[in-house]
Length: 333
Image (cartoon, rainbow, N blue to C red; front, side, top):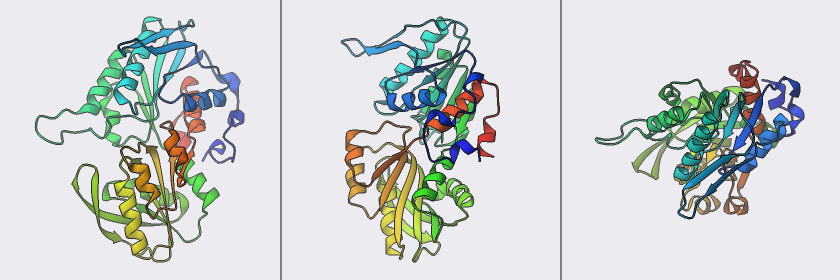
């Protein structure tokens, strides 16, 4: 694993050589300015001056206030809540850059919204993730950089190069720093997340267990069985998205019921809709750790079990490598 992912700091000092950035500019929307600033600090670059605002009727208005002709532009924008507003900001920023003759436009989408609508779930329903991929491409993006897509096949929805980064190295480092390896067991909260949990368990040299659940309706889940012996173990629940929190909280209850010593949860994207944070606060989880792919709200920060870890160095290094035409996949070798 590259050294920059394993140092204890989160600053621009990770950069091996800032001089190899060629004609690169950063543009940020309003969805996650804090993450954009951290990425800019890592790359030792300023954020391009621009106005991304609303008219009185809430139409999105974009104005790029610097010359970007011939530049390699990275547009940083998560499509999280409010999803539709943030999607429009992203599309209009890309279109503005294309019309301003940018050499290449890379859409950096730490959280790719609509990813859970990746197939026809029933008759007469859209494949929304594919539609969003089409919109981003038609707007003028030449490349997409995202983190932990909910479904890997969404990469195939794009007709342009798409890099799907994995937050696992950042999560592994945090587990080692705050928990350690002793008596550790990695838990997949459902059968669909087994591949993700197994990969994390392999990195940590830990055992794996699976929560078997039955989902009766959207947003609700019922834990049925624990596959594996968790008695006396320190359990780490791993998921890509935490939305309502029902799956994670029910899994924690089941694990404690089966004799687990303690349960913590890690996720890449903390959506936390509805009463998710209240549910987590009252659950048997010791902590809920997410990355900053989605901007933390005041309610999240006020939750005593909530903690955020930054993926800015991971995204920043991938951006540097793309700009310098270096391998991105070797980040995870």
